[in-house]
Length: 566
Image (cartoon, rainbow, N blue to C red; front, side, top):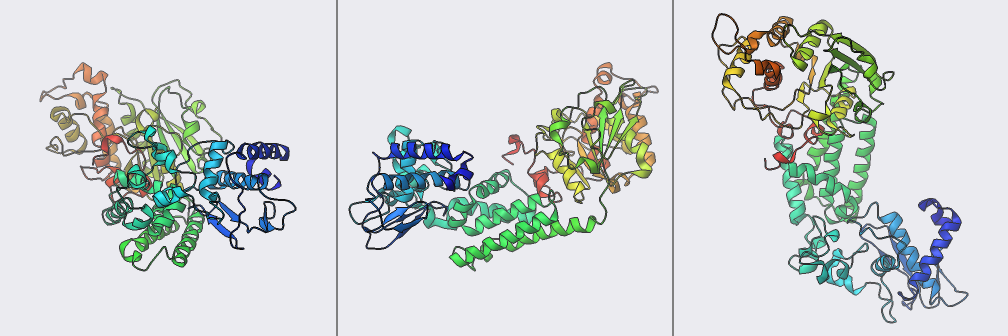
């Protein structure tokens, strides 16, 4: 009880009461642990290496407090043996659940069936008089039957043709553990289908920069079961940790990444010492390349961190509620971010609508009037650039005042907050869209032709399908990209999108506009097609997950299921 009090968050009396109640429940269902075993002690571990129990010889009993075999004052049959089984199951629950290599069944650690199941598999009840510690179920499915998973709990007919689905993950399946159609995953190791697929996806990502949705989903799962995966296929577990470090290097201090690299080195050494990692693995798995990508990420931040970059969040605002900011942004980053509110509606106290006003580095309100026609965020963005052209910050993040409607869920972690954190940490992002959906509007050759020629002074416009990008005008852009075009370009663009000329599709002397287009601000909607072109990107902007120029964290955020077949 003294040993467990600090671990389970209960006071000593509650632990003692629970210990005696659970031990009493187990008495009818288990045999005494200590039996004749040739005068030796036997150690049994679960697959994650955390749960353990000792079997004592006939002349000794188990002392749970001192964790050793001692001469007994009385026979150990009955209560002492059952108590040890309970202690083993309890320790498995509190120490093994968090790092277990397989999903938990979800049963209470103090229920008799669950505790007996864990004890029967992790400890292995005595069989006959010889002290055999492996239960018969272990022999049926090899590594399938550990950590509280029994054949009858997972493969019994009442669970149907696929067994108990709570037992399975990508490696341990009904086919491998129950149907006998495949070999024990422990025997297949890195040559198993699961790890082979992961290795191919990593190799493709390193070679092309394409992070397929399957790859994005797979490496966190390998990490989530790290202990089990490390024993089954050490290079796969190490590779997944490198991919995770590459994703996080943009978002975390370099000192934290250095600590993770040190932990990686220790795990690598441990794998070599245990024989789980061999020289041939370095030829099959791109571990060194993964390490180099993490180093490059750290170096790129250190080169640009001689001074903290200036970053401005540009918000197009009228009368919207800004409560979403409370859950979207990490307060720790706000002191390094300037907020520019572009006020589109007269008589509105825009500053008062901002949560945590005292935390931002500064708050500036910029007034932009739409004359003669309203242009929503288009005139706000162009107006801000004109207002600040000669003193632009290093990076700007442009968003609507109703950003969650367009970017998606902004509960942390989210793509908007992560982008701000990355820039604050010194990551350079020339341009990236932050929306979740691609533009699905039809490219109308009449309206888009007028917009394209009016903005760029071109004599012709691209054809339908040649321009591909993201909805809905939320993006990060660097000062260098904005300055690719002279101030005069933004002056002309602002004048054009707020004039009748941008809505006139007929070659008449005077502009002829369509009332529905003006009311629906069609020109500003069509601007979604061209923001990335204005700031120096090619016409067909790749999906973020397939863009080799973007850091990994931007590839893994806002991946929509509609694109899973790409």
